[in-house]
Length: 70
Image (cartoon, rainbow, N blue to C red; front, side, top):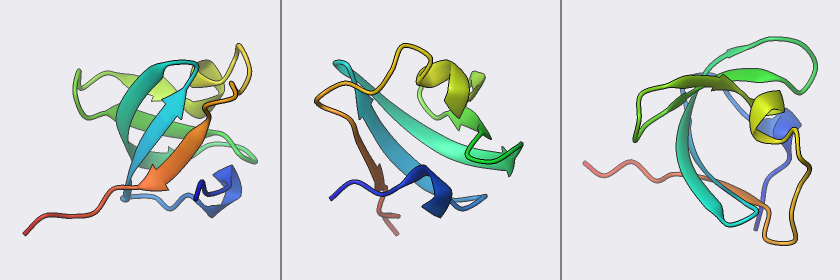
């Protein structure tokens, strides 16, 4: 079940699926409202949630916390 943007927590890792793209993200810090600075765990690039969702949420939109493997 997808979680809402306002439930994201700094330091946690999430899987974002939107419009066919799959990204593993770590939340770095909260900017304003529902906008966060995130680090892509595959490319190590930094984005904001607003940049990733600027074209809208697709029918496949899903945001879930990644489980830590120990």
